[in-house]
Image (cartoon, rainbow, N blue to C red; front, side, top):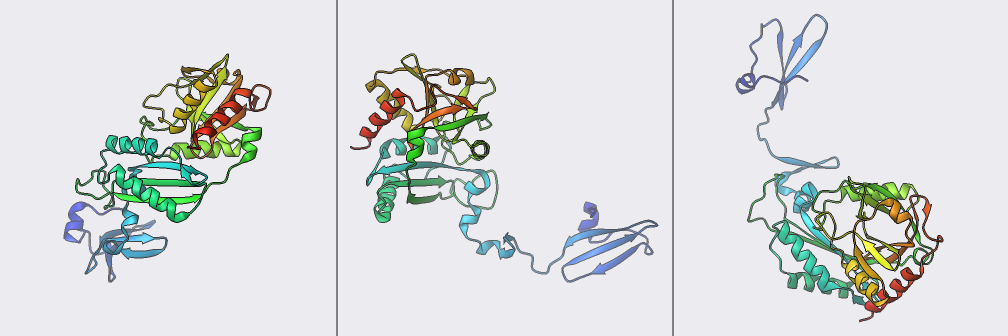
Length: 330
């Protein structure tokens, strides 16, 4: 359908010879049909409703915009404009709540999102956890900038939206016992991965690729060919009595589990090395593992179809898992 020139749209008419222009009037629109020797074209002059209104469509249902629930106008949905956290509990106790709250607060500050204090978030988390009554739970929450008609710019008076859910967390003992396979994938994420923002599409694509290959995690590679981290985890290698992982930077999430892994490493006699790894170095390591809130430490026994070590969870990885468990008892 061809567009009508601006001048024509303003007048509602097109200056055409009478024998070429045929008005086709309806209740909502006016069309002019142009008949030529080989084809017929329709130029729509746009909507001429008596009572125009802004609308939205949910699936196949039309709703007046002013009647739409605020959740459908959330900037988190339009732009990923928000920060989230995932916590877990062990046997009825929330683990590392204060560390997660501190990271959440920093992320909100970096994105200039205000309107809620850490004490209030803590209260909501504890209230929800107590209400759910799940001993081993996954606790997810996020705060978005708020709801408004889609616009990149935001109103400074906008009120943030808070969402939280508590779900059952089921341990995969087989992963812990036998280890998992991982595969590499290009790191396509934005350049501020130190902020736990809602922008996760690159992570989603990476993990789907790994799943299709029968792997439990995707290990991300930057443009220089170095490993940054897992799509949803921190990544570690053990070799020569040391434990190695990439140093924290704008492209690395300051993992809460990473902090406890470092503490555990010191207790089992491993030297910390914060330096990026190549895939070749990872394949040649004695042991590999990932660390993530919902699973703590998980051994990696295959890396891009290459067997790691003897193909079984390594001695140090097992020691780290045991030491990590002691942290969850307090």
